[in-house]
Length: 379
Image (cartoon, rainbow, N blue to C red; front, side, top):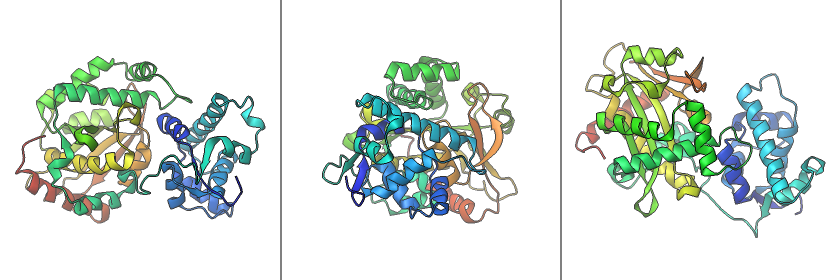
């Protein structure tokens, strides 16, 4: 490949990095590029992650960033992500017949990791994951042509149990440097949660039976489920227990859920993996943005919920691939606490009653969806 070529990462390498949750944070990478006088912007990094064709200099820049010393502003999350992506690269090269990847120059690694324009294996909308687009992702829902309920897949005990399996599969890959079998990935998650897959499936079904809006499924291509969102509407006392690291969210008793509630825990939002019949991430998240926002409206909004001095508060964790980027895009902030048992970092979103900017947009969006969704039955 010539230095002027436009290239993309190979699809099987992308799947390895996606499964391991090994992508560095876009903003830190772009900031480093600017300091290193490399003309690489956020849009180019999104294209790299989506498997789109970019100038070779962009991927060479990413490989250089992985080798660069940690800066004073490099946080622990970024240090881990860079180490995981480096491990993915080395494992992939070894698996494709390269005995000693560390001896290869970056341009030689690209020969094994990438396709040129004539070989490109996949092309995805550059705004693929709408959950990482922040307010731009929310605005998309007003441009959608279909009625909102068409984005939902009918919930059932069987469908929920299957979707929980996707979550355990995805979570199990997060701390793995290379590919795992489904059983190995699920076992990793069971150890992390100290809860078996079947126990969590029972918990999710119990939540759904308590209130059908707590567990919703997104409809994808070919009329199949393509994503799941689990949101727990909590009493303030339970919320504070989780926030202080004293209670694991999935140990919160569904009998004590409160609807409507000002205190939410976003337990999971997960797309069905491609290896399990899922859709490309752009199509999956297009449906999932709708379902999550309607779900929030159903669980949080009453006619006067924002009409007094009490804020709306939501917690979540950085437990899934891209979770940290998604949470930060929607205004969540790290609170310096970790989830009981599993140890993920906790993030919190606070929208005051007199919300402005992103908070106001949430307010208007949720209230508008609430007025509309009162006409529907739960999916």
